[in-house]
Length: 217
Image 1 (cartoon, rainbow, N blue to C red):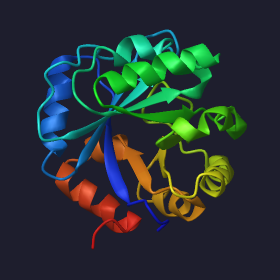
Image 2: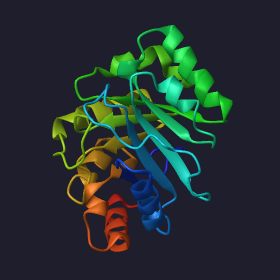
Image 3: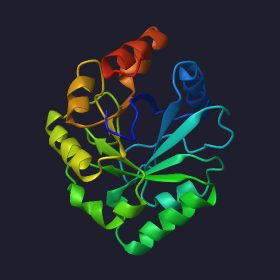
Image 4: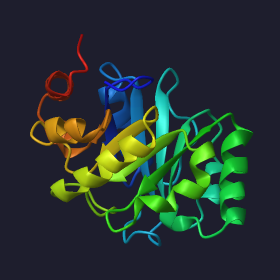
């Protein structure tokens, strides 16, 4: 494990209704510290998810994975401290970045950056001093149930070399088979959707993923 980082399994919730969002949060809450909420506007990616995000259950840490065209507009609507992960592909100028930073800081939020499979890691470097978290997409964003792209492990390793003490999360096709190789490449956070919510016993599924990741001590 890299200094300053911890290993964690993070359920990723991609749903279209507020009722299903709340139900999934409550199902995983006894087993995890953090929940990732995938938010899509139907523009940045060809899918639309729940956009009503107020009044989430308390006592849970949240990270919002903003797959939206103008993330600063959405971040302003969140009233609880959280990790806000924006796609570097939506940041087209220093002004865009300042808008994102300002929106995140309004509610004591932290700022992370997601990188799509086709995007070069050097897109992050101009903003390195402000980044608290990196998410490497191991599928193309937009839909769950996709197959893990092992070629992204080179990018994970490059991110770990460039940002040795920052949490690096992987998202897409994460399961019992792909966690070990992603971890060896340098990831320490693992966002899982189908590997949790498609299982009959969610608690057992999360424990099994934690065991493989080395998150149980």
